[in-house]
Length: 251
Image (cartoon, rainbow, N blue to C red; front, side):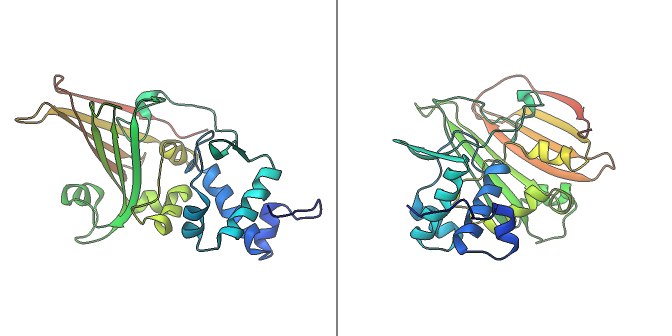
C-alpha cells in the first residue's frame, strides 16, 4: 500500500496544484463516488479496470485508493473495495427512479447500465430537437431476475440542454465508452439541483404480438425545453395508460 502522511494536502487542494498523479486519480474517483457512479456500499471495479479507466498504472490506483481509505471514503473487506461515502437523502418516490422502470433494492436482479456518445434513435432525436446525425449521451439499462425472467430494457437519450446545464451529466461524455458501469440513479436529483423543474409524461402501451409493454417517458423543464426521453420495454401485459406529474426544482 502507498504511504501517506498527515501533511498530505486535502484532495481538492492537491488536484488544483497539479499534485501527484495518485492524488489526481483519487480526486477523480471521489467525484465519481459523489455523483453516484458508484453508489455507497457497492463494490468498486478492480484495480486493473480502474487503471484502464483512468489511464494509469495499477500502483497509482493502489495509492489513490489508500488516500480514499485514509479519509474514510472507501473500505476494503473480503468482497474488495467499496464506497462508504454517505449518500444523498432520498427525496423522491421510487416511481421517479432513473431510468423509468429501474429496479430498486432488488438483490436478486441482474442489472447492467452503460453510456455511449452516439446518434440517438430517430424518434429520440426528433423529440429532443437534435439535428440529423447529431450525437448525444445515450444511456442503456438492462435488468432481469436471477432466473432470467422479468426482463426489462431501457434506452435514454439526453438533450443538449440537459448536458449543458447539469454538470454531473456532462461529466459522462468523457466516460461514454459503452463498457464501464454508469448507474445514473440520481439523474433527476441532479437536474433539480441545477434549478430545473421536471415535467414528466409517461405513456404505457402493449406491444403487438408480444407479452410486453413499452413505457415512453418524456421529460421537459419549466421552459418546455426537452431534457430526456426514455423507451422502456418490460415483460408484462397491463392495460395501456398515460399519466403526468411535475417535480419542482430543489429549493
